[in-house]
Image: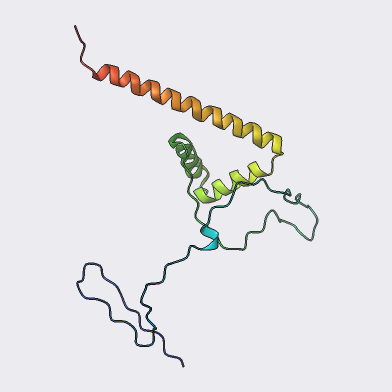
Amino acid sequence: MSARPRLVLDDPLDGRQPTPRPDAEREAEPARRQPRASAKLRPAVPPTRKPAPISNKSDQPNEWRDWAGPKRVASFRLPDELLDEVNAASEELGIPIGHLVIAGITSLLDQPADEITALADRTAQTLVRGKRNAARRKKATEKIAQPAES
């Protein structure tokens, strides 16, 4: 039976320095943590191939996609109204939000490229229109807040 290394907790509020493990070699300069390969940003490159069409053969009865690998956390800025819609749909349908988002994204990616492009253009126009409306509301609110000059 091999001996496990002893866990040393670092408490930033405690004035004591942690005692080094006797078997650990210390370098003069602390090692810098390298980012994981999956954490690096990838360039936005369109996929070179489309997913294989769904086969209704009996040897693959319910195959859609195969996700057996690791999962990553992704963060995207989405409009509050869209997040409210997703949350309401999740509650109404009794489906976890993550599953609903995955189903929506995969459904989108199954569409032809020209339809995806048209939806992306529509999204861009909607976001611009939303920014303009927000700027107008802010300007109107500032006018109301200013005292009337005579």
